[in-house]
Length: 232
Image 1 (tube, rainbow, N blue to C red):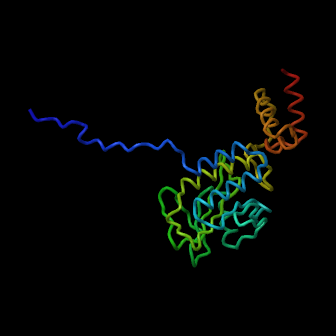
Image 2 (image 1 turned 135 degrees about the horizontal axis):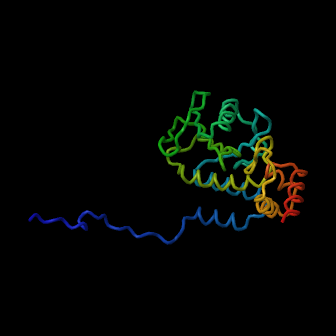
């Protein structure tokens, strides 16, 4: 009989798991728990992205017109900044494709970037990360890579923080673009009441804001509330 090797012989030594969460995780938790003004919270999360990626210039691009975008939030403190032609072109493409894009030195054409396959290099000057919820791009995280060590950026962390920003943006009206719950007009459904009431609560009782978040006009929201409340 051949001796069967003990499975323990192949087992790697178990490394102790730290029970102390990372500093950035504590920061995210604090921002979310103390969230009151969405704009302030988004700015804080953006600064957290910049701090943990080692970048000085990170911004959130929002639609300003059908083919133009502005930097409504920026880690440098600049508001409503203007992007270069190359970035504007990439943003237009990104709101349709939902893909990550990178712009390299000496090129004006954005290239597709697979965050968990591709690696950033010193030739990359700008990374564009779509902030997506429910298959809708709410905004784009624009990261200026110039002068930074791009290959050391934790893209998983960027993706996570970007998702937190997207959640906060979803409760606001995104100019000229559909919001989180935007949908084509449909007939009143019996199960809509809870969704509508939830949206109103989420918007602190502001029915006009809730209607915009739901992709409805205020009049459509009032009609639905009246009809559904009467049927209950």
